[in-house]
Length: 381
Figure 1: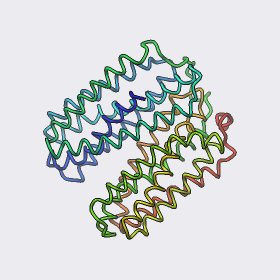
Figure 2: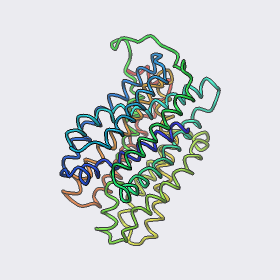
Figure 3: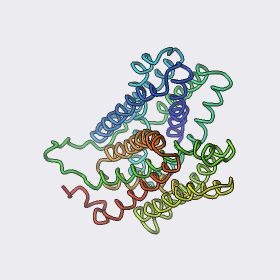
Figure 4: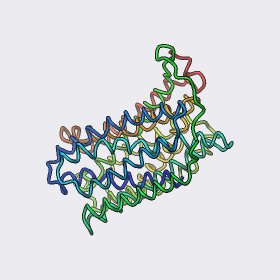
């Protein structure tokens, strides 16, 4: 849990800050942010898939995680010296892709560790996911505060220190010989397509697109279109994150009672409802009330989604976790790009309607694939 928290703290301090650094720190134009993100995202997807396959075939967890950590440490050191967009794209972006595979590696490590020690896998997954939420409550706020007070170089140096702490934790806590039970690598033509795993990833994608669309559009929608105070976006996000952490704890117990798929169905209904309600807010207390619902839906999703995805490939936890992590990154990319296009063509309220539709799509996928259950998914080709 401490490993995942430290990894997420470093990532959350940098990822939201990079677009601001490109525009304000390097003096680049806003559209040039896409040059950086357009390279980081596909590299991250490839790195996650590569790491998942290595883990499933007996690659040492510690060695793989150290690759990610060293990439993070080097890129934070480079960021203190970067003076042009070209340096950022050529030097930092590839390292960021490698660094981003760390979370998936820790999730996979947590699952294998839990199975070998007869721990509740779903609960361990939810606790690990909770540490990610806690880190994202702290990291972005801390990094932007440091930038405002001391500048970008000091902020990047602090992230470098977090990377060093992460390195020490990984070195001390992960056994040097820890690996999954190595499995023979099947030829692609002999291995059936795991449609259940892909559908589970698609479901997660729908939730993440909803969340990204809303978070991207929220500040301008609340302040410009609705006329609410400038503090409203921050207050809404704080309420949502606080509720989310508590709901993650309870999501596993709820899943034990009604099933993981049913929890995700409930989350999708709450997601679509909260997005539609946000379009109607006119007062600050309206925002706070709906933010509570938003926190409930995202907490339910965050608490059980990785266990849902992994359940379709119990013998391939690395691959399943890679699918899960890639759905998060891909959903974030789709949501961020789509928000700008939709808002430019219409307005920010329309973005929220599209966000609601994305959750409805996730609900439809969940209901339409009831027959595809864990254990039978790999037999479907």
